[in-house]
Image (tube, rainbow over all chains, first blue to last red; front, side, top):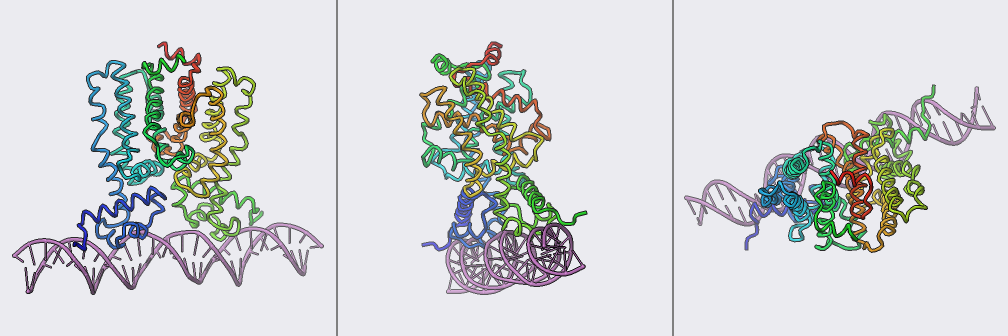
Amino acid sequence: MKKYASSEQTRLTLINAAGELAAEMGFSNVSTRAIAMRAKENIGSIHYHFGGKEQLFEAVVKEVVKRGDTYPVSQAVEPFHNVLDTPAGQSGALRAIVKREITLLFDPDYPPWHSRVVYQLMQQKGRLQDIMTRDLFTPIVDTIESLLKRIDSSLDREETFLIITQMISPIASHADYMAYCLEHLGTDHYSADYLQKMEDMIVQKVELLLGLTSEKFKSTLEE
Amino acid sequence: MKKYASSEQTRLTLINAAGELAAEMGFSNVSTRAIAMRAKENIGSIHYHFGGKEQLFEAVVKEVVKRGDTYPVSQAVEPFHNVLDTPAGQSGALRAIVKREITLLFDPDYPPWHSRVVYQLMQQKGRLQDIMTRDLFTPIVDTIESLLKRIDSSLDREETFLIITQMISPIASHADYMAYCLEHLGTDHYSADYLQKMEDMIVQKVELLLGLTSEKFKSTLEE
DNA sequence: CGATAATTTAATCAAACGATTAAAATATAT
DNA sequence: ATATATTTTAATCGTTTGATTAAATTATCG
């Protein structure tokens, strides 16, 4: 039996431990010693494998980015490429973006720390925020932006951004303030049903704002 | 001329410095020495006036809470007390809550760190979050909750909470991720016009979800 | 004025931090 | 089997942290 793990395995163990701790108490409250203890590795290994704490944190963020790249926004929107001039196509594309975001953050098949690690980086400037913004956030914002421009070319920059925040913020809050949300809902995780409701509500709302009144909504309105 | 400031003045100077720094780099990245330097006071004064760093931070949060208490949600909703069974009254109450939240966070007459200090506490559990949740957040949530119940008694707990997040999250994001938002908008502060648009959009959206279609919206829809 | 209380100052303390390294342990290749 | 490369370990380094205190300074009050 091997007594030394492979370099790659040790790296992943450290990344995972660091991610867990960052999810629990925020990056700036995580010490190298705590990471090493959680990972059951030696402190020195962090320096050996990553060069230092900051580079390990970078690897943590890149791990989340890497996962997002397995299903990029462009791919989510692609099926609607040819129908973007119809309300149904526009609506479908919007929903696809929202669905992707929710899935990516709350899919129970992935380590739960992924969702808690992302949005806390939006709070203060730094290298970690740059990576996360550039590789995760900007692509989404740009995609929504061009889609909105297509739906209503009269929207100005401010209105466009406001609509984007209407779409993304509720999802971000469920990730960033997860502890509070779960406590308020009296559960230990978001159910698939709840996430579906969230998706529906966000999509409905944006459709309404944009005048893309969907069938689903009409029935709601008539109640 | 006095060489020693009054106890109360020193306290406020320290609270303000701590608040500024917490807004700039997050509570957990603020050291007592940095606070003392920013406040041009001695480190020892933190111990003398507050007992320690954590208690100073508590005072920072309570300072924000105190300001919220000058215009409580109950007072914002009060004018609509007698018309809560009409759609117009319900709609007005919703708008009043949204307007209060936006004003409280982004009013340029108050220290700008107020808005940046609040929502970062939602990320991890602790005494500061408890204070902020209990004294600032819960009253708002409870008020919206009972209002929603009144508007549509068939809403369940999950739906109610989702609507609340639709109302609050966009505002919270503008506070919590302010640096990113301002950079994206290419400005150094949110204009009164922008904040008004935000209010309108949030209120419209919720009215639509609840079937409280307002005049303002109808015209938008007819475009 | 003189005495007491309140406040500020500068210095020191132990603890925790990230980084680094020489040596030990293991794996790999010849 | 031996030599070389890789990985882990334990210990130490200099800094920074929050807290504390005795002494100095200023304010207050009789």
